Length: 439
Image: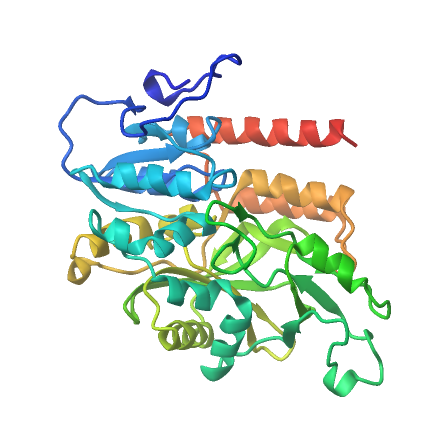
């Protein structure tokens, strides 16, 4: 049950389910008339809160849609309205209908995608949303060129962008020059699709949506059980060359029908895991070759909307494409802190104010997600990744403490808006408490 001030409390267990009117079941934090509002899905990553803070501080009304009452964004003082919506994992069409119900309101100008399922729904039903709000996101075919990684890597090669050796995992894969030494190379197995839904998986219906499984690191020299991996992934996954580096780079952009509106770059120093993953500590950079690779790829795709293009830099200094995330990225708060106010750029583009966008950012500064730093240390203690070298725990702890002292920028922690940070720590504690209890 949702109550005043953005707080939520558990519904009674015996409450029966009824058909919900999502335009009525809301919590309002202000009685002032609304004329310009933006819809922001609430997720566990800091990107939702970053959108609320930067837009709220500019006087733009924010409507938070959430299926989880523990979402940190619901605790932000910049959450002007909260609307409960169905979980897209349980019913994708019901989630779309709930978003559309909010979009039909006269005050709503646009919707911000903060996760893959958001942009999938917005792209698949773009025509329905376009009747009511601005749609600065790709159409379904353009989105599929990023979310189907076979199409993505083919497009990258056409654009002259470096890619690791990649193909569909098959029972008799073509090893090329390594054909005389099957499985001797270092490989990873990853999902072909960024989302598992009916546009990509033939036997899924409209309401089905599943997050793809995590990447598997294969032991060199040992032939994997391909049938088991295919069953685990829920579709025929990709076999990809492992790039043996720890430097990950992000090229972040907002595009308007093939033209760059704003761009930003960062180098990931630490992720959630010592093997990589989402960013917990990163620094802003300005590298011409990275800019060129990102622009060449997105230009070739005739991209529209948001994109985070992930690259690894190999031992020869070449940037190799890993994936495109066609929505706001988890480290968005740091982009904003560096001066690249992408949520506001997105708002301006949606409102026909592209020419007013003043884009710049400061290079050579860094910032943290404190929960991510804790997860990094946790991974050193408890995880074993076959192909990644595990760092020293004491050395890593010392590096983290030192960097926190030097670079005092944090994704959630804010004296101006402290409650999302507290909620995020509570959520992390509860998650790992439950994880340990089932071991």
